[in-house]
Image (cartoon, rainbow, N blue to C red; front, side):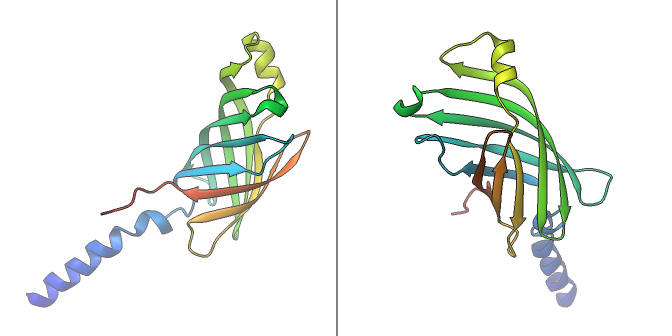
Length: 155
């Protein structure tokens, strides 16, 4: 009886780790890029969901491009959908811009949507599955990118 209780306790503890290993990307991540145009940076939150195709994920995210005075304090918040393909520890994320949620200075929404280039990434998953680093790219630039798991700390 005692062994069964210990085994059940171990199984419960191991099952709490399952989300980190079942679908290595599944879940919520935060990300940001290196600075560009002097004082701009892109950051956001992305959620990966497993698909029926092995090592392929669907994803949705919101990103913010925040620029300082060198770029006229430009601010753009967009909603994007994406697919991610994992090969070994390499992950390619291909994105489509769905909607510009906010932009300052204001522009006609259709013009704003046409002007924002999709945020695509090629990154490598760390051994501990808690971080990905690599490149952000679009038609105009290539930047460094970093993703990390959005996990709340336990007290």
